[in-house]
Image 1 (cartoon, one colour):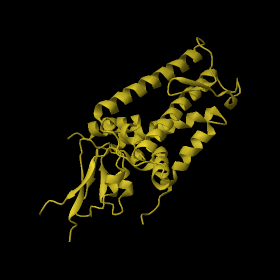
Image 2 (cartoon, chains in turn orange, cyan):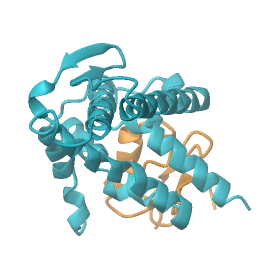
Image 3 (cartoon, one colour):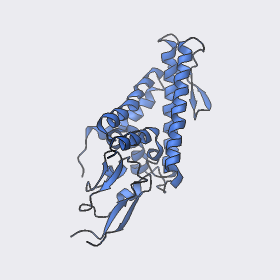
Image 4 (cartoon, rainbow over the protein chains, first blue to last red):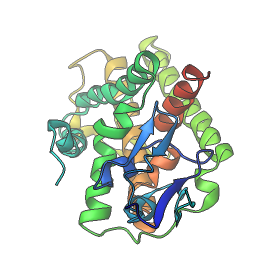
Amino acid sequence: MLSKRLAAVDKTRCVACGVCENICPLGAIKVHRGCYAAVETGRCVGCGKCAKLCPGGCIEVKARPEA
Amino acid sequence: MKKKHWYDYLWIWSILYFALGFFNILFAWLGMIDFFLPLVFAVFGGNKFFCNHLCGRGQLFSKLGGELKCSRCKPTPRWMSSKWFRYGFLIFFLTMFGNMVFQTYLVGAGASSLREAIKLFWTFRVPWGWTYTAGTVADWVAQFSFGFYSLMLTSLLLGLIVMALYKPRTWCAFCPMGTMTQGICKLKNKE
């Protein structure tokens, strides 16, 4: 079963530093081609570790959209 | 638990670099690695592998701010990670770098003499003469060392200040290298 919440990245403000990628315990968020961080929605459990450390403040943990 | 890589220990390199500059300023040249590697990854690989995994300074901020809790962990002000500030700071930084290269040129051309001091925050001159014995190398080589080390130390101090005030790696939000490599990646990966 998928978690109720997941991380969402504001790609326009992401600085692609990779802090989220390094902290994510599940490897669910990765910097895509040096441009922005992308969340693998199937893996993310919405723990919020990435959002807590993101220096750009562009990650938010939101309710997972209904499938 | 994530698998540790050899490059997870590059924060040691960052400390070592600044320590070496207290003994012999010529080691400042090693900092050029941190200048060119990110660009090589961005230009040829189209990625930010350097920022994401190899940046010793970023790792150091993560250690100090995260594990050692030297950071308030408050949100970075929005303007600090805005485009105009990031690119503005990049332009300012490159201008200052250009100025430093020009000073090196002046010393090399004999129009100016070697100054054994470093300049912090582009303003405060700090005597640093004990790290260099005159005549060891060509004057311009030494001048560049002092200039480049000033730049590196200034940006480290700025990074430490914003680390303490905001998130551990707030520096990354407006790091000139980061802005430059992300810009290159965006251009390269434009579809």
